Length: 192
Image (cartoon, rainbow, N blue to C red):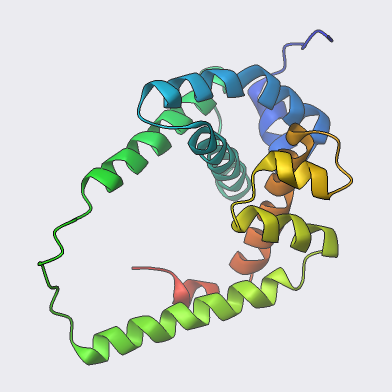
């Protein structure tokens, strides 16, 4: 096993934005087990931990690219805090969902149709941009969005480990996100 050298936060941030596989792999090997342990201890599973970790890395990369964030603490501590906040937000949203089937929300037909139209336009934009990424990314993302476990994705692709697949999913999601956000229609289709 190789020794992970100490790097400053800006190097990690730039590696996320640039998609540097070597450094992203180090981020995974250094931090994922702690995030997984936290989520398993707080009503979550391994898949939840993987999703939260991916979202956190993507969120940090996008924020750094957009705002050029500077981390005052260590990168590891910052990443763990982002993961904890994402998981707590997820738990809170699950807790606040109404499960009473007798509650009927009164929504005007016009508002419902407008929401359906916006949702359709979002879906069309998503599919259009998905078709712009490489064939490899399309395959990986299709499997990921279908919630195929990482182990099965490894078996059906040329990749040799789940870590490599996670990195590829991260890069492909980032590319897709950049394409969507770069489209002039994106702002008009955001949720208010």
